[in-house]
Image (cartoon, rainbow, N blue to C red; front, top):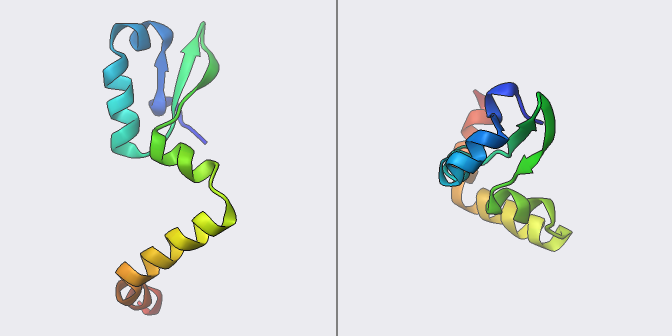
Length: 80
């Protein structure tokens, strides 16, 4: 799920929580929190968390929106 480059130490998290939150928001990926060289958990950006807990109707609506917005580009990419 996460590579070491997406990990921060507890000390770094304590020093600058906003930086960790900004990193997660920029990448859309969870940031691993490490203590004593062991992964303890993740800071998950809100958009990613909403996707994790979304029900099937919400996922279908999101997919339909992407297809509506980018369908022509997706079709072109699939052919090329």
